[in-house]
Length: 474
View 1 (tube, rainbow, N blue to C red):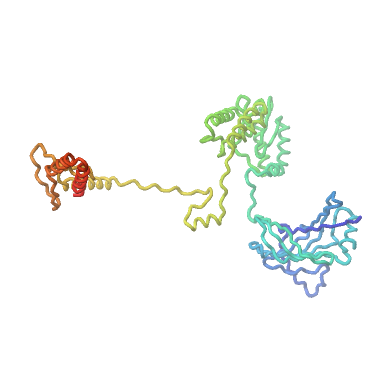
View 2 (view 1 turned 180 degrees about the vertical axis):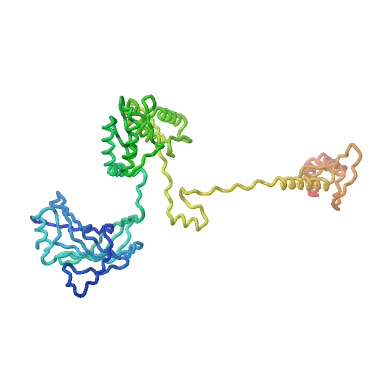
């Protein structure tokens, strides 16, 4: 069986490299030389030796453009250098044993080892020596090096990926999708013992995560005390502890609730929760989602939609109308895209420039100006009143609006006695034009208009204009 072409791809996974430094132990002088492979040299501070038992070099071959054959080289060895910080310090020197090729087909493997392909008799190994490493995105890099296969060396570029492994205490986040499977594995023996206890006492046992539920009817109900005591003993023997505040005995006459669902006659959503859900639905339908909330979520539309799916899963008959109403609200009020979180570089650049950093982080509100001191306000008002009084006493005569000249007929006389002159600035007021001068000018203008018929009116108008202009400027 022969192949026309062979596409070879190697992958170096740094996570499978196990760091171990082996220093050859000094042998006693009288002891014979040890049999086996020679001791490996000691590793440097940033070097890792590839673990042959946990590493592999895989390849794929497209056969007749129809199927894809997968294969691997089982024996991979070499050294990897990396300081863990700068990707440019990454280097790899890998040696692959060509005789360890396997495609799960003996005839095909023998053909690949022959001179038709790898010619393992003359070229027993494949080697890869890196020359440089460059970053290629978040957590990814490209490794450029020389790949020697079948006696021919060519430069290739390998796509790599960095795997970050926590070296501290391992914790499983709350709500992880692996929690149910891990809990079932841990509680496998506990479940067997509790199932046996429940059968002995006439109860039915079920468990969801860390919630243990026992149900019974008839004569078995009288054995609740025995059941609780035995359950405490079995749970503590398996390395767990029963929470005393969460242990409840629910009779038929009360609402029997397990994991948030009512299980008296049939599994259903609690009525008070459904009433609250319908009330929020109606409020959002009438007045919109602003200021409304349901549950711990911030987006009331998403919360209503999620609970609608939950109610539909528990009871399709009663949950379908609620889900339809929630879906109509979700279509009416689509979610708004939140602003993209700013990068650290943008945050530092804005902060160094004295600007408000972009994004959704908390920004302190501007402080309002402090309220004015009431004592200072009262003093300022007194000063304003004093200045206004001084201005009134400094101006002689009757007050008149600004920009209004005095009457050309003179100031009117007051009905009472004249007021005594007040002490003011030493500026004498200007003399006003007597009223009879203005009257004589007007009379002269009338005579000119009547005496000189062709041009008397023009001369009289020019004379009045010149007089009143002079009077206004004065």
